[in-house]
Amino acid sequence: GAELGGAVDALFPGNNYLATTLKAVVKTIKIRNALGLRRQTFFVQYGGWDHHGELLNTEAGMLSTLDTAIGAYQQALEVLGLQNDVTTFTASDFGRTLRSNGRGTDHAWGANALVFGGKVDGGKIFGSYPDLTLDGPDDVGRGGRLLPSTAADLYFAELLRWFGVSAGNLGYVLPNIANFWNPNSASAPLGFMLS
Image (tube, rainbow, N blue to C red; front, side):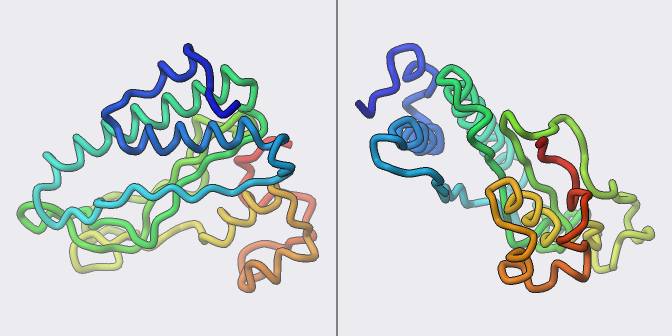
């Protein structure tokens, strides 16, 4: 059935929309064989990060919600023995400035992402850690907008290789990948996925 079982169900708090959504994802992953699915992709949105104002109060609550939800999600995958079959990652279309606008932050370029799962070489930073000095070498100006050090193409190439996209097809999916990495290379784009 689609139920996870009492111990796994109990991992997910009922008052957390994101946790409830991720619980539904785990249920669907659990029954993938019955559905005849070999590969699945789930998109889960957790918006509201555009903190031009009330940054500290709003972000603290959102980070707590995120922490609880992804913690329960990963624990459920581990209890079900699915941790090596699932890789979870975040994606966003922009970052935030380092300098406050008085009540929050404004739109910027460089950002970070989370990747986790049993096949992830975790606990590390991939890419170059930026100099966080305002108006420093990595600040492109106007309030702490950091120039990204790592192309999103590399991030997605790493995930697509794990998902099974061949080296010959990476250029179709990521037309700019050759500007950052050779898809025929024996080395990984970034190296966060274990083989």
